[in-house]
Length: 260
Ligand code: GLY
Ligand code: MN
Ligand code: MN
Image (cartoon, rainbow, N blue to C red; front, side, top):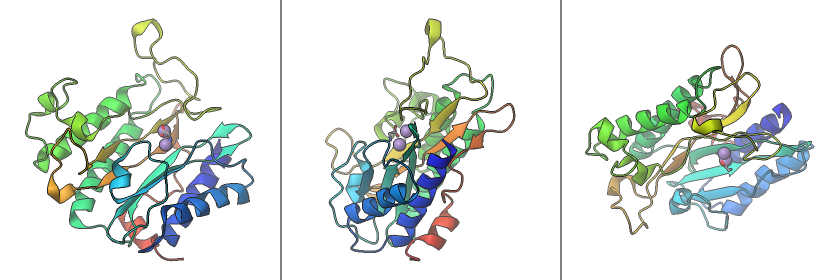
């Protein structure tokens, strides 16, 4: 799993370096999947999601044929499989290498949510604690930006809360021989507690699809889709982020994109 994670991390970094205005989604896909082969893996662990602009706001987008513009965010969810074991990484970055203010506002919230959720991947915590942590941080951030006009408690409500308009999936899953690995989440109906040796993904996101008929997308954030996903080994001590080599901070990303 460490090798799959390492190769997948470098593959994302190479795609960042190759990004530029006018590149096609499939060109970035080919760099990533080509490096999976170069790295001795058996290729992708699941079909790669490579979506720029509004495609970044479509959760299971795999068409990967659009031309990217410099001011758009590209979201890439791609991981390699090595000796049967999967990696699962998502990174999101501006094709032209510089985040707009609006993109930065959303990215910072998702990164904060992801880092706090990773910190919750500790022995003895319920498996869904990272999800609850991420949900709170995302909702607080969207309240701060004025995108959600409810209290924190209201925003998190599964029926009437506004968070689910912009964050509509779980924060992670078991990872191993399958990308969504086998394993019971709620034996006896209660969330399983994390144990050393378990590996799970941590992947919060925010998606502002201006194309959606069901919600009014705030214009400032139209077609920004951000997800940040790492693979985390639970240990007796600090969580071990297997994909930590993959660039993730705004400063690192802005320093790398387009540098090929
Ligand atoms: N790549 C599938 C997932 O993130 O769950
Ligand atoms: Mn995943
Ligand atoms: Mn993924």
